[in-house]
Length: 190
Image 1 (cartoon, one colour):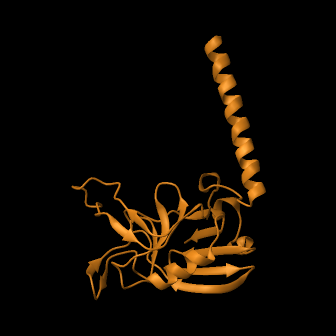
Image 2 (cartoon, one colour):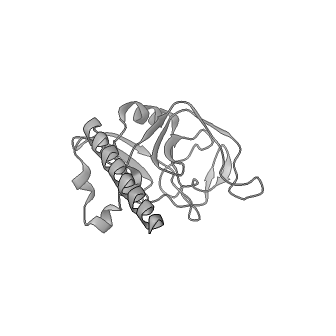
Image 3 (cartoon, one colour):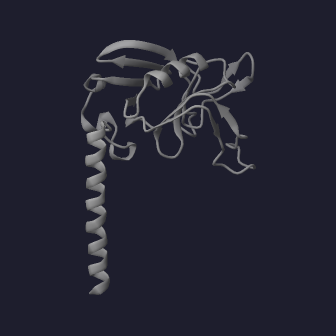
């Protein structure tokens, strides 16, 4: 009985703490974490439902990013998203971290085909826990349709898409980094 009471007390305290955190976040203008949101398709919402304030929309099929402010297109760029074996998750998220500069470290062991050495990044916006970012990628010079699969880069040779991140040219990543706020909505759709 005591064990059950402790679990109930712990659960109640955890829920109270979570409620307090969510209340503070909404007071500060942060609407939700990446974990609490589901894909727009499952919620029955359309991309246009998220175009109030600052919203970034990424199309996986077109390999394209559009940024909107109060429903008006303010920026557009080709991107490179996750390869078939490591796809970019679709859904509705919010930017919760901004890094400038950053060094990305591979979560994969050195003998994995997905391993990459420590990599310098200039501008990174994290939108999903587990290392999902919108960021610049100096090792790519080709972006847009077809780049999330096998494609030829005239500077770096044969490549495939990312490890799940949304990669873009440096000048676009810089612009987006300076424009986006913490809490900015990101819609990743087919």
